[in-house]
Image (tube, rainbow, N blue to C red; front, side, top):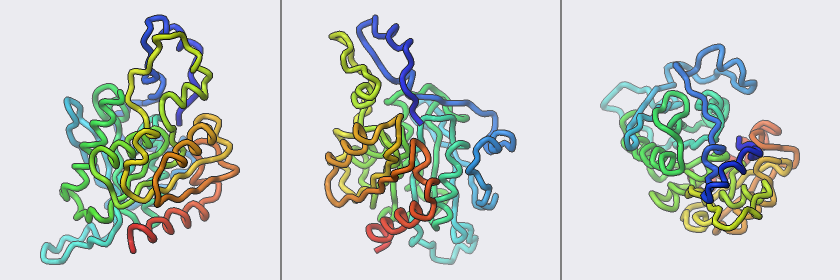
Amino acid sequence: MIKRLIPGLMIITMTGCFSLEPFYYQNVELNEYFGEKDMKQWENYRGIIPDELIVADSFTAGTNTIFAFWALQEPDTVTDTTAEPDTSIVTVLYNHGNYHNINHYWDKVEFLWEMGYRVYIYDYPGFGRSTGEPTSETCYESAEMAYFQVISGDVAEINASRLVYYGMSLGGYMTTFLAADISSPAAAIMESCPASTSALMKDSGLLDLPGGIVSADDYDSQARIADIGCPLLLMHGRMDDYITFDNHAVVLWEAASEPKDSFWVDEACHGNVSTVDCEAYQKKVTGFISEYVEK
């Protein structure tokens, strides 16, 4: 999730150049993934994916080592080299939010895996065990290299016509970047995503900053979303008080091109769109993917 800006931000504005990046990232480093003590703090984690279907991965993005995981489906484990690979499985490249690391988002991977999808999730620089520092540049770079890692086929045979990008909160920026600037997927899903840094500044009452105050990052999904070139599903909680519905969801919806679909959850805040009504969430995601990807 993305928290509201803190008052100390104004100290930085004294320099005449301003960036939200120090406040975008609430990353937590790890010595190991899926440690029992750490996983217990995430109430929606169920541990339903068999160990043999969870495959650790890593790749290089610039000078950083990025750690990632696959949540595979059963057909991916077939060892018969003469058998035809199952290319019907939908693959989801999951771009997570700004909080903690992969561990925090594993319950969301479980939801998608439970729907029958193969999921790939990675940690941005400075998150989990990934090295480096998170900035818009390094996060975009890690997203781009994650895409190439997915389509490489090193772990599973990927059908590019069944590849879906999923962006959660901060990950929405990586989703629109990948779709608009790198390679358009079969479909894209964005959950509780900010429209842009300037929209976040508006939420925080920072648009009246003195002249010369500018944002140093390149986070602007509003500018990219019309160019993603694929069907889009936007999901947002109407009670979200971090990434507010009117300043972000509505803005992205109006900027997006057809075909597009929405899932607005009246009772949802930030981060719980998938859990307020799990059945409705599952029905929406599977219906969208069935219509545009599995057709």
